[in-house]
Image 1 (cartoon, helix red, strand yellow):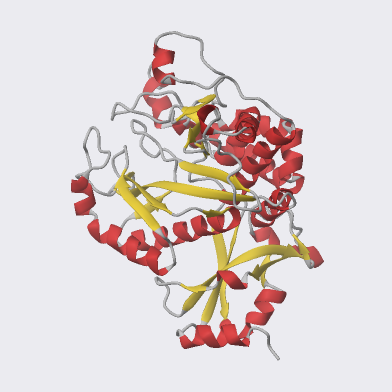
Image 2: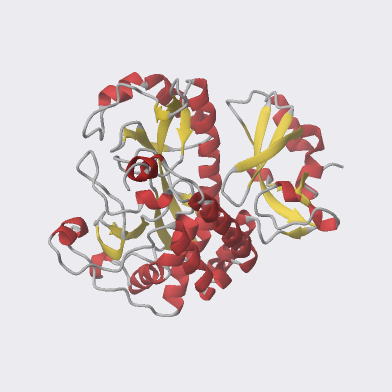
Length: 443
C-alpha cells in the first residue's frame, strides 16, 4: 500500500495535479520542476531527479552515480500555490547517490541545527524582508516601477501605498492563503522600496518560508507589471535593502536563553557570548550574509538622499542601536548584516555556528555602543573595526576563518568560495559608466 495515498487523495480533492519540487541553488535562488502528484511516494523516497552539474554549486560530476541531483520532497511542506492553480509547492532536500548532499544549503542548515538540538535548544528566527519594485524603461535601464515615488524622505509614504494598493493587496491575500501570519507592510526609506513582516518561526521553517515569500513576490509583482528585486542597493543615492534576522534561543522548557531582565542590555551571559561570536566571525559571515558585489554598496558609510542610513558598517553592538551590526532588543538579538540576495539557509547556518562558537568559547563582546556611530564618525572619534569593504575582502575572510568553515561545512564553503572568486573577477573586468565619465577625456 502506498503510505502517501491519503496525502495524494487530499491534494487531488483540492484540484492538485502536479507538485512543484523546489530546491535552492548555492546562490539562494529557487529551482525545481513540475512532477505528477500521483507519484508522490517516488518524489519523497527517491526524489525528483536533476542533472547535478546544471545547478550552481552542487560540485557534482558530469557522469556517474553522483552526477544526478535528487530533490526529496518534505511532505509537511506540501501546500497549494495560489498563483499556480493545480500545483502544490514542496520544499526539497538535496541528495546524491542516496546520501545527503553536503553542498545543499538546506542540508547544511539541518546539520548545524543538530548542534543545538543535542542541547535541547531551539533557534527561532524572525526575518524582515526589504525589497524594491522595479521596471525597465524604454531604453532598457532599470528604474523604480512607480514613477511618482520621488519623495526626499519616503519612509511610511501612504500615497505610494495607495498607488500600489493592488500589488499590496494581492501580496497580502496570497501570503495569507499560504499560511503567513502577517504583521505589517510599509514603504521603506528608499523610493520604490517596501518591507513586509511576518511572524517568526523555527530556523529551518523560517528559511523555507522566506524562499516561499520570494517565489510569491516574484509571481505577484509580475502580475502587476513590476519586478520584485532582492538586489541590495539598486539606487546609488538611496538606502539599500536588508534582511535582518531577529534571533532567540529557547531551552527544552521554552525558556528564552538570551533574555535576562537584570542583565546588561537585557541579555544573559550566553546572549552576550552569542553576540561576541557574531562579532568575532563577522568578516567571514559577510561573505555568506552579503554575498554579492552590490552588497557592499549597501554596506558603505555613505550618505543617503533621505538624510538617513541604517547601514551596519561597524562591528559593534548596542541596545536598540540600529547603527550597530548587532542590535539588542527585548531580550533578543537582531543580526543586521544579511541582505536579501543571500542564500538564507547558508546565512542562518553561518550565523548560528558563529554565535554558538561564541557561547562554547566563552567569548566576551566589546563594551556596548551607546551612541550613533555615524555621528561619532563625523566627529572624528576613534571607530570600531569595520566590516569588509567589498566581496573580495569578505570571501578572503571566509577562506581564512577555518573554524567557521568547519562549523558550517567545508563542502559548501569550498564551492561557494570558488564561485564568488569567479564573480569578483568578472566584476573587475567590467568598465562602468562612472569610470568612463571620470576618465575618458580626463588625461
